[in-house]
Image (cartoon, rainbow, N blue to C red; front, side):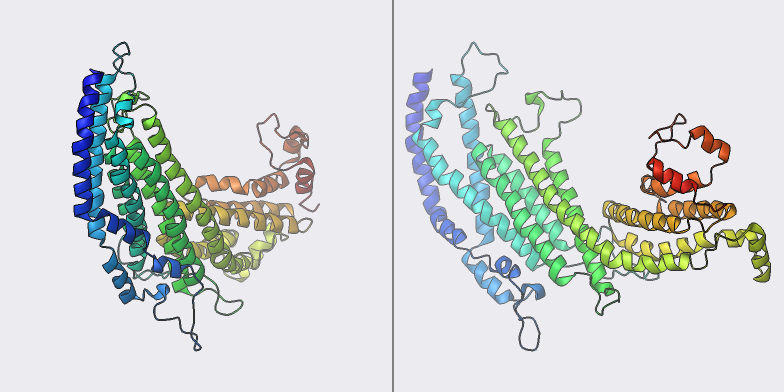
Length: 511
């Protein structure tokens, strides 16, 4: 059988070679390769250069930041027709798919009959060393890899040239928002659509060499061009800094910065779903079995399936690492420049006349003088904080994705817990027993407001909670804990305060 296959392969080399040469000449593949290799990607290159300004301080007319230079872009497109490139990629992918089926057929015929039926196939030498195999590599695989790189990068460039941000967004809760969440730039949808198409087409070739080139390339372009463009916009166009020292950033900058943060988060989610949809095993199929994997039919040869799965997972994890790093930086900027400056006056107003040194009788008398009942006075700190907190956070929550807002809330809670702890210690020796009870009630109300909808945030206030708990313990209860020098007492309390801090908290109330 092998001898027969070798003779047939010799004829296939001749006929297949003629077909590939004729097709390559007819489609002008060499010309297309020359054009795509020389394409300058001017928009992307200029976008990463420092913005040039005229003597009057106005950005140049062709600045990528303004979406200008349309004529220059069009003239570049005339040199490389994207539809022609896409058409060539489709034709090559079909031919490579047929080549894979042909190779699989010969591998099955040349397979050692003593091997089990489910044993992995190996490409026979009659294929790997054939003239047609070498011609397929030179005329199909290599051009496909080169043109795929150009097609994807040019698509990313075009997406940012045509990029649009959502309109009608506002931090004013009285203004309705146009459109539906998530609020992201249009480039995200465009780029991720192309990512899905490029991956799908590459998988259809059933060629390991294609996957080894295209998948890492997608990761590089996403990491350098997509993430890089978003980062540049965050830094140069939307950075939320105050116009005057001591002021607040303009609303339009805050909104556009949030939109870019959302865009990174949604892009991360989109890519994860694209990869998962290619890798997940259908329900009812045996997990772990190679033949049950959705890509097994496309990559039947030994180790190819494992390699492709690894490449796709690597693409997902690498992009996620890049985006999460920029997301973390962006959320920190949003906290430092937007949340933190506004939170200070909220806290100042909250504790404006906090008087934890007064007795219960004194508070009742003050309430009588101001026509307030005792309950109103006791709830005053909580009400003030809740009003200031919701005024600050609700407009931002309305615009952000759920996951990015949760991270922003966690960052804010960490800062707020430190501020509250510092304030608690500042009352040391200045509050009475009744004041300590009120303080615990007030601070618990603040923690409940912050942790509303995110119960895990309560753990970030564990130090404040334990300081006030120790301060308000009855003497008998404290004695039962033995002033506890253990990290975990018999009562199961997991202490986050050390022994010295617990003793200090115990002395918070003046005698």
